[in-house]
Image (cartoon, rainbow, N blue to C red; front, side, top):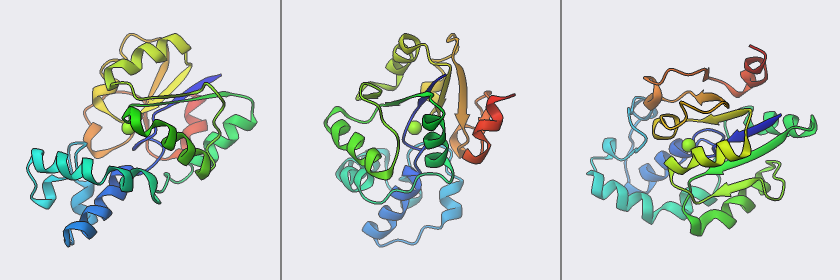
Length: 187
Ligand SMILES: [Mg+2]
């Protein structure tokens, strides 16, 4: 089968990682419970930042957010390694900015994620992912972001939603825990 995966906040816990960095950089102690209750993808509001300040903060910290020790979600790495061992095709589709694509691929490989040449797509807009998903004729695609998922209504691909606080309104098969992924496929 052909599996496609978003990276940030689907395979790796990037927002939580960035949240810890924000606390450190801004000298704050905003609680993890506060983080878990944020109803949007952006994380700056509990730090008292405006959208403009939040965007500036995100962009100034981006390399540190992306390329330090962001953890993957429990079971995500093992799940993809197992799928690869079983002979499935694994594709990555991330809208990270173009200038970070090569480093992102290298970082993912260093974490142990199985990446085949030509299976790493990066640098598109969120709304452009759908064209790639169709062209690859993926069987399964996993993402977290409502803006992406809203574009995937008419694909034949089975779309699975990685559960997050900001996507509770989206009505799709919901992955709470990567340990459950292979079981979900059989349903
Ligand atoms: Mg994502």
